[in-house]
Image (cartoon, rainbow, N blue to C red; front, side, top):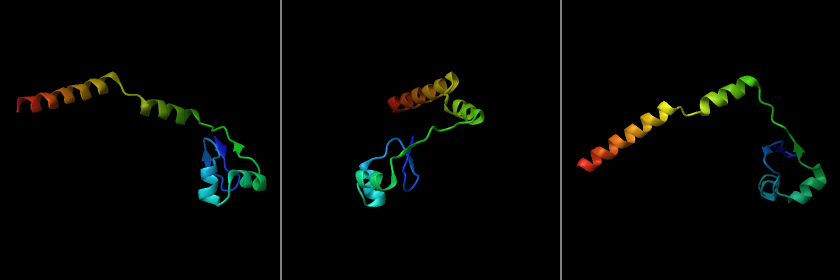
Length: 80
């Protein structure tokens, strides 16, 4: 991730759009005046990594329940 040298916003890349909309100057002008965007390596603690892993995974049971509900709804509509 990169950090805007003027406002500190984190983004994938410092873009001309960001510079013009936020700071009313081109990327070239902003980097000439304030320096290049700083590369920032995001640090994630083990607890956060564990939470992301646990929260993002859809279990087989979750998938099967959703599929059964969808089949149920489709079957009801087809019967009418």
